[in-house]
Length: 369
Image (cartoon, rainbow, N blue to C red; front, side, top):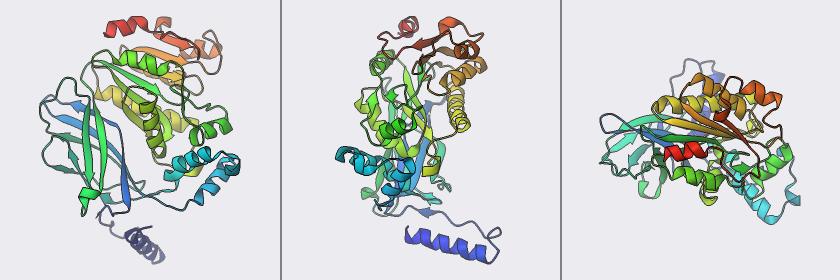
C-alpha cells in the first residue's frame, strides 16, 4: 500500500470514527505514483462525420502486491495443490494470478497521448474499482484505408519518460462485418462446465486453441473492413494472458471486452452476471456501429445460444448469422435449440462439432468479399 493510499485510508477511518464520513468532502484526485500501473484493454475507435475519431478507452489503475505467499491461499481457495503441479505449471499459476492480489487505486488521474495526434487528453479520476472508462474525440491526421489501430500511451507525471503504459484502439469503419466472438470453449479450450479442469486450464496449463477456429477467423479477416471483438466474462486480471493467447494462437487481433476487475471470491461469475455483461457489450457495439453487419460466435457450454438468439430477435436485420461450437453434444434437434431458436430462420444459425473442418457460413463469407 502506498503512502498516499495509507493517508487516504487513515483520513477515511478518522471521519468514520467521528461519524462524519457522509459529510466529508470528496478526496482530491492525485497523479499516479511510481509504483502504480495502468492496464489498457484493446478498445474501439469510430470515425466521426467530421473526420475525427471517437475513441473508447478502458483502463485499470492498480498497485501490485508482491507477496507471493498469497498464491498459496488463492490456490487453496480454488481447490488446487501447488505442490502437485509441475514447476512450469507453478510458474504459470504465479504469473496468471499476480493481478488478483493487486490493489485497485481510486482517484488517480493521468494524461493520454495518441500517436500522430497533437496534444494530450486528461482522463477522469479512476473509480473505486480502479477503472477508467471514457470516450474521447480526437483530431487525427488522414488515416490510411489499411490502418486498423490507433496507438496511444499514458503519461503519468514526473519521470514520465520511464513511466508510460501503452494501449491501442481498433479502428472500426462505418460499414463492414464485425465478428463478436466468445473466448472460453469457443476459441480456447477451457472446459467451463468442469470446475477443476476449468481452473487448471485457466491458471496452470498452456492455453490450448480450439481446432480450426484461428484458420476460419483469418479467412473471415481477409475480407475488407472485417473486424473482430472478443467477448468474455473473464475478469480484467486475465487480460494479459488472454491477449497473448489471441496473438500467439494466430487469431486476428481485435478489441477485447472483459468483466470488471474482481476478487478471488467473485472470480467465477453467476449466470446472470455473465449474461448481463455479454448483452451489455453486444448492445453497445450494435449501437456504436449501426451500419455494420454482425456474426455472433460462441459455444454451447454456457448461455451463448440463448444470449445470441435474444440479440438476433432484438435487432432484426443486423445479425448475418450465429455460430455455436458444440461442446455439450446436445444436437441441433434437441429441445434446447428448438426452443432457443424458434422462429429464427434455420439457415441463419449453425451448430458445429468440435472436430468439424468446414466453416458453416461459406455463402456469407464469400458475399463479404
